[in-house]
Amino acid sequence: MTDRTPQFSRRQILAAGSAATLLPMGNVSAQPTTYPQRPVKLIVPNAPGSSIDTISRVFATQLALTLPQPIVVDNKAGAAGAIGVEMGRVAPPDGYALIIASSSSVTVAPLLQKAVPYEPLRDFDFISLLALLPNVLVCNPALPLRTTADLIAYAKSRGGNSNMASAGIGSVSHLAGVALQTAAGFQSLHVPYKGGSQGVASVVSGETDWVLTPAPAALGLVSSGRLRLLAHSMDAAAQPLGKTPSIAQTVPGFSFSSWIGMMAPKGLPPEVVDTLRRHITQALQQADLRKSFENNGAVPTPSSPQEFRAYLVKDIEQSRKAIQLAGVQPE
Image 1: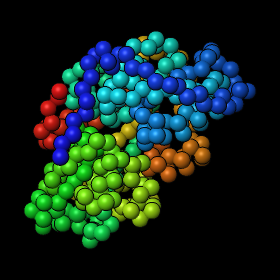
Image 2 (image 1 turned 60 degrees about the horizontal axis):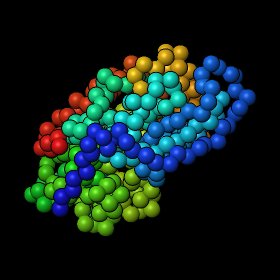
Image 3 (image 1 turned 45 degrees about the vertical axis):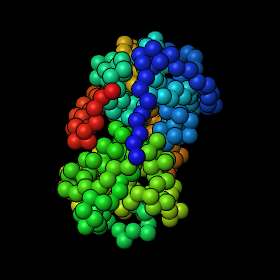
């Protein structure tokens, strides 16, 4: 079974359109500042209802309570997120059009799609990371597996005949799964699907055995007993999911997580960056937001622009290596 993410021309990436959603204005009595003077648009390069969209809306709702202007969430899905990111890149650098960036749209899409016209480290201003999203290692609960070590032993005993699901060729779940197999020294047959929900559903049904997928795509099914959670993909010291162990406790040094951050068109005034960072930090500290993030497997992660850029540099290199291991060629 094969799957290919549709490729888009530069013209298509530049010419997307979709409806916007207006979030409540919140606290209008906040201390006035030079910026913002009108509603702020957050471009989300993902479809409504996706895990990135869900987390973005939780964040946007909280941000609207600290900024003295409404927040508009504008979904611009397509081309693995490249359409929305490119719309943000060509917007005026005035702070009124901001990008909710993610691993798939900013790290992976430029590595796999020749038509992507932006270069992540060159074409944007970095404002802050918003959250880290651990990938979770989950399996069908009918399998006799309880730990990462169990999965590795099971796959080895099957001689490569176990099945790994993914959201499609070149997706985060594909690259993370390949990285795990390489690091742990086992093989599973890759079964790509058309999107994360279909890939996860295949593990639920028993059509495939396991998947290493962004946490929001699987935690609800874990809670209902339809998937078994084995481990998370953050480093050994992290505890994003309570007592759930990390893969790194079994496969030393393994770390392969996703992220969400706020970027802007190049040339954003420094005072706007400072204002946004202050309000982002305040929003990410709120108990309601942290609870909602926790329910979606997201770890609030405010950062400086420099820290965000440094994180992206490492993420691009890690994904580049995983793409080479997977044998996926840019198209």
